[in-house]
Image (cartoon, rainbow over all chains, first blue to last red; front, side, top):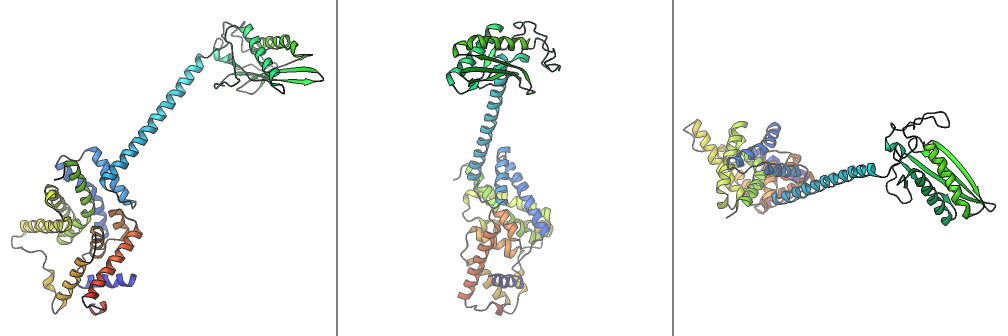
Amino acid sequence: MIRKIGLFQNLLEKYKIEKPVSADAQKYIFAARSETIKSVLSAYGEFGIGYKMLVSFNILTRRIGIRTSIAWSRFILAGIALTMAGIIAAGAYLSLKHFQKHMDRDRLPFIQGEQIAGAGKNDKPDAKGDTFKGNSPGNESSYRLGVERFSGVEEKTVNDITDKIISGITDLLGKNPVIDLRGARDKNVKMIVMGSSRSLAGRIIITAKLVDVETGRILLTEQETVDSPAETGPACSKISKKIVDRLE
Amino acid sequence: MLDVKNKKDLFTEVYLDYYPLVFSSVLTKIDHLDDARDICQEVFMIFYEKMNEIENHRPWLIGTLRNVVLRYYQKKRSDIDNIDDIEFTFVNGEREARMIIKEAIEHAKCDDIDRLMLDLIAVHKFSYNTVAGLLGLTRRQVEYRYGQVVQRILDHLRDKGIKDLSGLL
């Protein structure tokens, strides 16, 4: 086939049927094509910004080897525009939700500065002598406290102990002072109470830790041992008291 | 009768397809890029106005561009009344051979795109890649379709009794 094409080209050359256009002129034609249509259609008032985009899109698709009609280009372009609008709208919606979530988080129950005896003393040294780098005194977010589900084998006992710890802290600090993190969606807290309940030789060992989420440092570790599940109440109260004392 | 939107769409499609051919044809006649561009613009403006009456775009565009180019020359030199006198430069049967080849090209079974490819590649020496980018085809498609068109032209010549092309060369 290449030979036949070569012969054919020779024929056109010999009989001067071919009229070559230089490579530079071809480039000029390529560029002038977009400009001239603008001039022609503008002369009839038919070349707005939308149509310019449509023509540009059609030229672009041609360049990458896709031949589409103007109607199809319009359809595809509308689809792209709708998709982009959808993405922008979804982005705006998600941003708004994110923003709202932050606003809500600020409105979630805190351990109020006034409710804690000695609020504003949160910069006192911890057990290691370091200064607890909380926010400024009275800034509620310094005390945002969550209680994780205690670990342990017996589901009932574990939940019972977790409930008692939450209620113990609540009793000491006032209304809505802690966030129950069991199944909570918002886990963005400054400090977490976590722990375990273990049975050993017929006794129950309750261990609780107060952890600074940001640094991962354990601020307090408390352990109580009881002989039966009925005695977990007072033990949890003791632990809650220690936690609250530590917060102060 | 086309409504404005359809008319504009159809115009744009025809324009994008035929602009390189019209421009190249004008350029081979006047050899001046800016003037060729102006003439092209004029041709397509007339085309836009008369679109509803035109059935076959290619011959109409070629005919109109000849008239516009002639007017262009007449403005420059009043003694010109024909711009395509190349036929008369051939003598001793060569003019006949040229007519046969041109007739074979005209009568090869080509759709509009094939014909455009033939004009751009064979006559105006555009590369396959450039034609692909202009017409919205891949290079392979252009190469394949062009080969098919050439084959049909050669078949037509064979039907006319020209068994060996080298005899014409």
